[in-house]
Image (cartoon, rainbow over all chains, first blue to last red; front, side, top):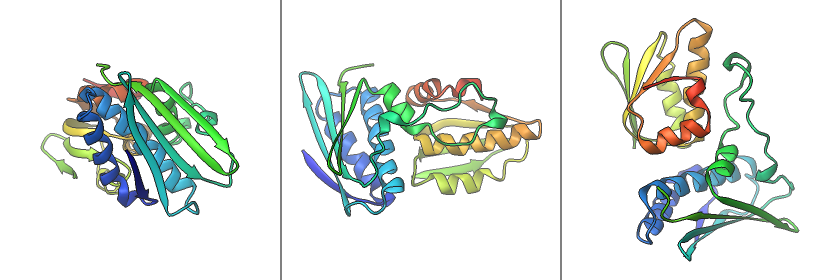
Length: 135
Length: 94
């Protein structure tokens, strides 16, 4: 299923509902539904905040195969920044020395079993894969 | 939908989804917390990194004054996120 979402945080409720409904009806445990919703929200929010001049809509492909959720998110951006290169939060620093933020991409990389990024010219494709029935 | 309710005995109840769209309103509401308090998350269905950032900022502010937050009644999804985010090192969680 290929869906487009306007590049605005106002699209979040429909985005999360679409992801949740799709995977809930395709065999995902509630744990995985929450995890995938979380991951898609984090990546989409990143696209909205840090690539505001990108195309008006972000395209997301939702699929499943061999017991695994497969989600692909497409975006165009000038910068060659990859979510895989985002620095790890400063866990070793005391709270007084840390700034809020920086957790989203880290958590996606940690919690989703497979996250891959490819870039062809200015087009970024993020592909996530995770077992549907993890508890 | 997300909401914040200030109850008795410095207990604050969060309800709904604390995500990127509700985080700004949550931050404004939680600015009212001025001393050690308990955040009851029993009715909080979901949290994203934006929500984590809101709670982190409150905790950082309170810690600066010798206070802190205790978080209670986290569901399993939120507890997982807190574990991966190592928020169990920053907050008292029951």
